[in-house]
Amino acid sequence: MITIREMLFEDLDQVLSIEEANFSVPWTANGFLSFLMREDAYFLVAVEGNHILGYCGVILTPPESDITNICVAQDFRRKGVARKLLEQLSSKLVQQGIREIHLEVRESNLPALTLYRKLGFNQDGLRPRYYESPTENAVLMTCRLPAQ
Image 1 (cartoon, rainbow, N blue to C red):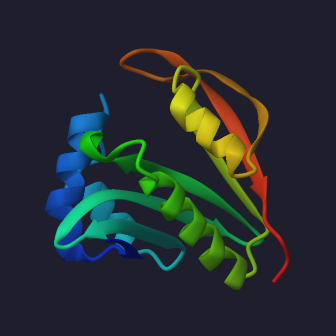
Image 2: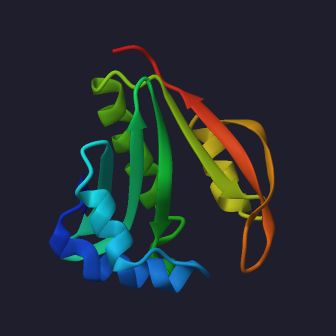
Image 3: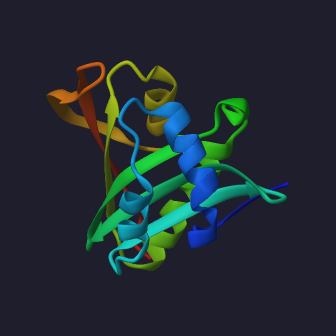
């Protein structure tokens, strides 16, 4: 059974393993640590037993927020893990009075774009050459959350 909970410092080894396997320019341990210590950041992990399947993070700038990262381990994709993470994240954000979630995603990441649209995100624009290794445009998206 998959559960969603707040990310702990003890989760970093598994999170970093997923991060490094999936991004050409991965966050470092120090990058994650600095965000985990911030009062305006909130990170979740999807867990099955003692195994982390995925994670997501957000920076809070009330009444808005920005997703910093979201990733699911390759073996657990297309099993609803990202959806569960985003639904739990949205629920927590609504409780905190957040009204919008912003994110950017690689233009070529069709599975993520499809999921975000299904969850109510709409495209706001395009940020040319935002990503590197390889260079690619970022699709900017926003989801408006219901009032609490």
